[in-house]
Amino acid sequence: MNFKLYKSSFLCATEDYINSKVVLAGVPMDFTVSFKPGSRFGPSKIREVSVGLEEYSVYQNKNLFNKVFYDMGDLELPFGNVDRCINMIFEFGKKVFKDDKIPIFLGGEHLISFPLIKAAKETYDDLVVLHFDAHADMRDDYMGEKLSHATVMRRVGEEIGFKNLYQFGIRSGSEEEISFAKENGHVFFIYEIERFFEVLSELQNKSVYLSIDIDVVDPAFAPGTGTPEPGGLTSMQLIDIILKMEKLNIIGADIVEVSPYYDISDRTTLLAAKIIRELVLLVD
Image (cartoon, rainbow, N blue to C red; front, top):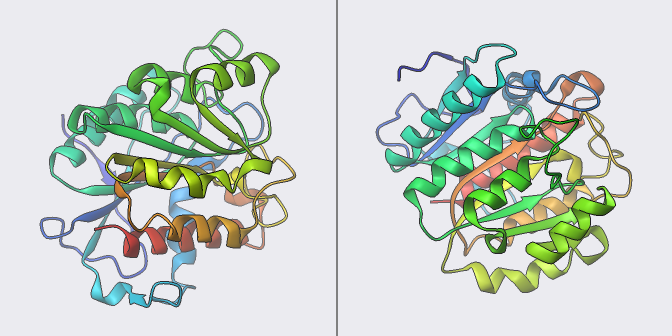
């Protein structure tokens, strides 16, 4: 399958795909959102504001200038065709993983994580998923649809096994899906966020895919998202959590549900860009 990508670049990204272990790629799809659309504009806006950041991370004492990483641009997707998009994203993800890259995908709605994680599973048999979100996303269907940003982690769990799914920051969901999550996987609610640091040691010998829905952060810090949910993490809490992952074998990641038009201050996209900077410096 040939892929068409619209090219734009994140801060300090090189043009060297071959020698880059870490690659960025935008997946601008937001066809199944249940409240406010617009996350398809997330990848381009994250790149735009990334130039407002320093190349140097005071947290890690590392500099993007010393890192060879590549920004592939945004995958071109057929607007409104969910099934075809899922297949295209899956094939695209499969290629990137088989090229032995560590991809960081920029969403886009959370449904994009399903085909990307499915693609990762083809390369990594011991795959586990770390999921940070305000919402459980564990419904079996949403308004009769199996493929939705409200069902994405149910589909992921079916693909990788629910015991390989770890969910953190959860503070919203139907009674049924929360019960299912508690009975079948590892779900930690927002008031249990410190449990993340206990789980870290269990995952050090696993291949870890990290999925971050920006709405895990309180809307006071990240209002630019389609389904904001009060009572979340602070920006610094999320950054600290990411920094604590330095000993994990992160084989891929995504950051999703950034909807820039709901945040004229750009603090949501700046937070997403900062998270991406820290991940680029952290992995490999």
